[in-house]
Length: 415
Image (cartoon, rainbow, N blue to C red):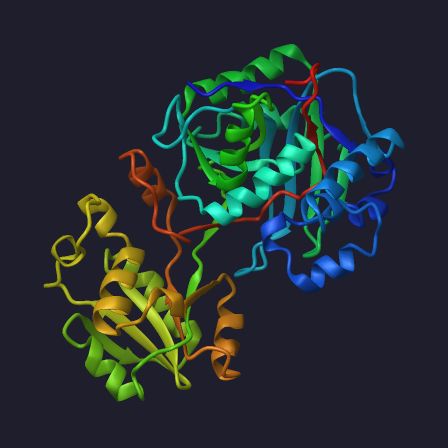
């Protein structure tokens, strides 16, 4: 069963009284920072980016030591569980939402295959695990929590309500104007309640697979046996999942008519030159159990729906379950992109923001954008509990916790 222990978190001392100063010291997760943003953030000499994305890995260890030795990163004596709140506007509706989770140290266990109730949902890639392994070898620390989800039916909500009406321990704003808040839970009885929630549920790694795997590898050689983790309930309405859209850089279809012809054995196609209507239709048809996709190509929006007589279980040739083969992404990649359009994997890239993808087509940076409905929590839950891994780039969990807001440093006294 999953094991949670409280942490002794480091934080920027100045941030306790100065949220504006703290804003200049924290950063988004390392893997969603653009080159332009990194250059700007590194103008601040104490920004956490100097550690999570260093020029050299040795620099990261030296910078962390300097921040601690100079009393810029400090910690409280007693261990705690953190409550992590984010106030943000939902991008599609503008609705103001507050989402709450809790942060502590999750015991590292083997996850390929899954063990002890900790379940991965995506594969890792060697070049990314090597990068994060070098960083943790130099720092033996976690600079942002991995993002996990569990199906708790709101079991933590009552605990949250005991704290979130008080002034937060830390508060700051991110690049999107979202407000991030931390409350610290010191009461032993409440800590035990959070531990019981983790112990009772399967924990799915949503974001942070590469950090988890590298921490696990590092733990085998004397490193920390735990990793800092954020736990979010599946049922929290503030949890949003996006799916990365597929950008195609080289497509053999010379025009719309030729593309329609190439997919005609498998898909019904209609032109719909209003993206808002296309999006609504895609959402509606998915609710009806259909496999549908959008395509933006040569200034035209296309709506593609898999024909009823097509059986993905027979068309997709691999060892995955029938449930896996009936996900949208295997159908997109194996049937639409590969079988119909002969698109090579190396000619595909990924983007979360549909509007940017559409602009990339208009600007000639890519030839086509294939638009996918978001992956649902139910799909993730079903596939991971079958012991399978979701297709690559299935999910983008949103919003994400900041780097540098709280930091876990492994020492002999802090496992």
